[in-house]
Image: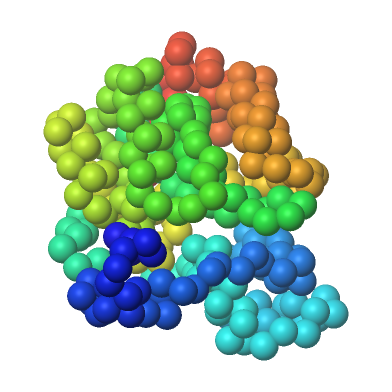
Length: 275
């Protein structure tokens, strides 16, 4: 957009494009080692106390000997895509032009694979830096149908993850997400609509609406992520992929009568799950 080799000064180019001149000259700074350590602690505490906001998290960090201001905690939470999970009043405005769909699963009986799929994104700490993990999950079997690791939370990698799931597993009757801008944008919802899939979205801050994905995050982090210190994005991708293979194919689930997700998905027994 900005051509630094053009005869027109960058100041005038920025003015013509109606963008901040400062944003043109700004070079992103890497996250400090101290902040990365705080972010790891915030991720762990958020998983244990999902209802905790910045004030409570600051107090929990202080109790562990980490002194940090509430504003800085809020900044790091925003960077991680993290917020306290509780039922908010419906006063939040969605992204301009983005439609928010109703939650369709309350009271529904989940009786077969590919009846309902869900998707979410979570923060993954590394030895230096962090990445984001997105998964598509089958509600009935808890099977991870597709996943991707990305250095950003942009919509493109969510669309790619969903396209992969559709190509390899057919399509669900209903697809459920939260109200994140990655999932409310036209690229994502248009893909679902084009495939004749009913769109369901969690209530704002209502983590129980997508509880099976929340349980997956707990398993992934306590059984894999927190035991590792990934040296690179490729290392994180390979190790998480290995764990998800174990999760699908070998890890028994008490909620599935001891079956693995692979078995429940491919050879379902007459289980009944209440949404």
